[in-house]
Image (tube, rainbow, N blue to C red; front, side):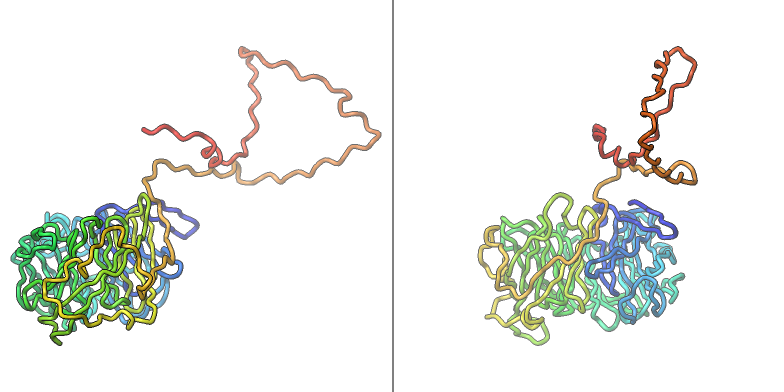
Length: 494
């Protein structure tokens, strides 16, 4: 990071991302927040996007960020709103900070209660999830990797917080998912190291309790015949179509499970020539569409369809059909580390590449959202549908289709310093407090004047080294230091 102080304005250019910043991003309240090493960067995802703030306060790499919801519209720096725009951030040690984003100020640091397991010295391995309850403003749920859940009530000014309750899970979770659309506060889906899935309800007044049935994925077998590996699970997401259905992302498969029925419904498997998944996106502007990000920088699209066998969702036969794949970024340092879909009112998604640049893409749908709503298909038995529509999809067949009703376009980039800084040079100021005014040019000599060589005497010979007279000083150089650095050859590598 480079800090440049110009008068009273402090500007920070973010640097490259650490691997511990992977997945640390949130797009909400009209702003985009992401972690870049130990800092939290705030970007206004306009056209083009602009870097607004860099919040410095963590001593370790930031792993999670979450905006607090509020009733006002999209804020801007320095704008007036109903109270501060709060942002919660957590680093890899478990330290949770509360920020006033509009002022760039650190308001408070949460310390877990005794035995809470979310402090920096608890040995828990950090925070697994940060979630603000939509039904109760200023209620923050903090889940640690040790399996401890703490619900905090944050004051309106954000400078104080009180722990309402604390609960410990029977088994340490490996993944958590939050259903943000439940009116009573939210539901939590938990994935354990044994491959078990279950659901909890979150209420502000009491600790969470189990809801629905437990689902074990250990008996699930992929289309390639590989057994389910709980340690390989990368991401857990709630389905926007049914509150009891969750997606489990694996490197080469996406499993859809029903937590009310307690069984997996279907899955999407990659062909052996495809590059593995690393994140799923469920954009609100593309209902029924799954966007999969691959390790080679490509984005694949899958359309979810169902036969509508059950209005309640249980027993519904779900099928996924492959639509297209398009490259996002290519080149060294361009691998995406964090991706987030825009709120429902925006048709876009953003990504942060490994070199620290922030990218924003638009997702324009031709014909509106109705053009890609899930349509009815012939009956497909639960568990079928591996690999989408069953056709072979090698790399040669994964070209983008012209029949897709949506388009993707890059709308802007926020630059960064993409590699570690080895040295830094600053051009010095001019010597002296006052600059000498330039002298006017001498007037031309009259024609009758003597030649310029008249009366000229040769200069004295050069002084010997043993002479005590000082050598004449060379004239001052007017070449800027940056020009000298550019003209000199680069130093050899260490």
